[in-house]
Amino acid sequence: MTRLYNFCAGPAALPVPVLAQAQADLLNWQNKGLSVMEMSHRSPEFVGIAKKAEQDLRDLMVIPDNYSVLFMQGGASSQFTMIPMNLLRGKKTADYINTGQWSKKAIAEAKRFCTVNVAASTEGNHFTSAPSQEELNLNPEAAYVHYTPNETIGGVQFDYIPETNGVPLVADYSSAILSEEIDVSRFAMIYAGAQKNIGPAGLCIVIIRDDLLGDVVEGTPTMFDYKVMADNDSMYNTPPSYGWYLAGLVFAWLKEQGGVKAIAEVNQRKAKKLYSFIDTNPFYANPVAINNRSSMNVPFTLVNSDLDKAFLAASEKAGLLNLAGHRSVGGMRASIYNAVEEKAVDALIAFMDEFAKENG
Ligand code: PMP
Figure 1 (cartoon, rainbow, N blue to C red):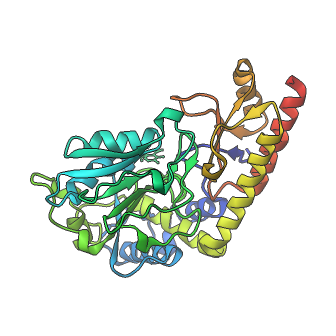
Figure 2 (figure 1 turned 45 degrees about the vertical axis):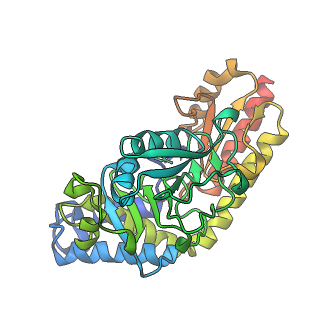
Figure 3 (figure 1 turned 90 degrees about the vertical axis):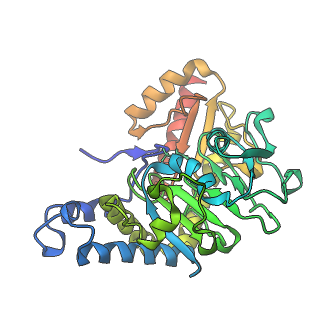
């Protein structure tokens, strides 16, 4: 059985060398006679794995020393709740920028804890753009500003980091972390579910500035308190240890590729060729404003949507997996994360071209 090209939005493709390493390690990690899955998280072996993974992530993202890196559970969705619990810090309102389905979910959770000021929303244009800095109606009294730099479903990416004039900026980087270089010091907190550019589902990375730890909303469960997690090196309880180990393999792999700068160049090339193909072939369309087109998630429609089912069936037959758009929007979507090689994008374009010729 050969491996096929996988364009899933998440859980997404992992680098083959990482899977091969995990396979080689599975029964007997480094000749210790057991699998990483079976190790105590307090053992020196696992603590070593955990520390190396964190250090590699710090190196890759150039995370300043005054930030903690937490390896959490509960997916990015749990962060929607933990963020107000941890970051309101006595304030009563928070700013949210609404650019799609994931922003909306974050807003809904925050509303359980505070007044949400929607500083800008692109719902009016069906989430096909991101607002400009000038369009942000920010409240200087807000506890924090939350936004989604890359909306996975709509394929909408910010082309700038919002300036918030000292109000802590929080970013849901689930679908774009490690895809391009970012200046971490511009953010109070970055979080990302692992199952796209980091590793398997079940792990969520939180990067948070240390002065924001502590002072949680009354009644916050212990497990949801970032300070407890930071004070215990994310091992207050049993962490998702196997996912953490796999994330470590992905970080090491990314370093071998030349780091974030090098992979960002490949990502730009991949995205550019796919969007140019879509733009020049009248059979296909992408509705997103050019400057806000995601380099990770490329949604597209067939101009004749009657052919959607046939397209999906034929693409699967051609070895191109998971091209259906999110169930809430339909159409197609190709997620082209770090581990999706350029040749997969080339194969997709060749298939789309052929399908258009046969059905146009
Ligand atoms: N935010 C974004 C931007 C996402 O893409 C996703 C998942 N696709 C989530 C949040 C939710 O992540 P999880 O399923 O890990 O809770």
